[in-house]
Image 1 (cartoon, rainbow, N blue to C red):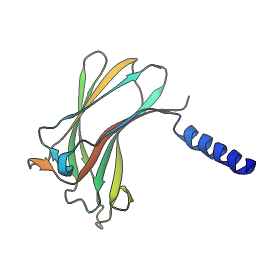
Image 2 (image 1 turned 45 degrees about the vertical axis):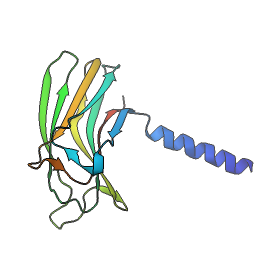
Image 3 (image 1 turned 180 degrees about the horizontal axis):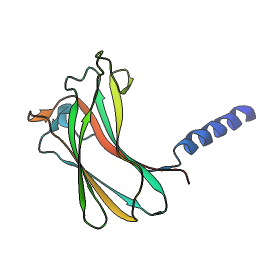
Image 4 (image 1 turned 90 degrees about the vertical axis):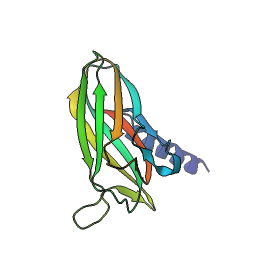
Length: 155
């Protein structure tokens, strides 16, 4: 019994230490009928407290397998603590040239993380991120979630 408990504690510690550099993660799953309406801009806010580090900021796109739109056009706006804005157009490729899923799929649920900031220093303060889709229709179908992750690079 003690060996099982010790094994469980070690496993829990190992799993939690894998995410020790992730300082923020949020996935918004508020999509009626899994439709992301054109007018529905998703907003996120995170705080950088350690300026002397480099960070990655990723968009997390969750969708149902066999997604019909490829690539998925997104517009990401990063608002820095000083109020300056940075816009970035993303095209998330959900299927490769052989029509195979590029996301990490488990059953019908798939996830893709796309980098918007890679290994760069961020100034201390509050950041806001707005994500909207740029699909031509009134909504983007079969969306399960959209979010961001902020990961501090090792010192």
